[in-house]
Length: 172
Image (cartoon, rainbow, N blue to C red; front, side, top):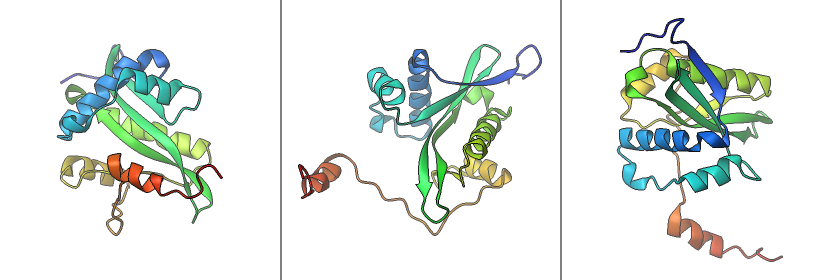
């Protein structure tokens, strides 16, 4: 286990386009952990375009222990109509296995909470796989609560394109 000390401090910073290979490495690590590597089709080019292009879709905070990359948090703004305020949605949080239990995940979530408050957001939220009891326990210790009455629904691939093809307002 690595010791986070004065000689190996924990630091966070916003990612830049130069960090795209590292971001992809973390995404692939997360996909492996979640047993979803077969669904991970992200590429450096797509990440560069969608994170640092003309219209960035998300932001990334990177964590380092000393000079070693330790983890990341990828997030974007959403909106709560009930609060009439923006929020932050944490899409992915990943900490390299050798750095788990050292406060890296907590530091990343603390940073996102600070950004949410600074940006006058009404909430910070995310999803977690129901089998990931370690993560669920960690989140609950931070004060988060599971929204068990909500079920996530998703349209992707062919189903998304088929529904979009029904758009009668296209070209109007």
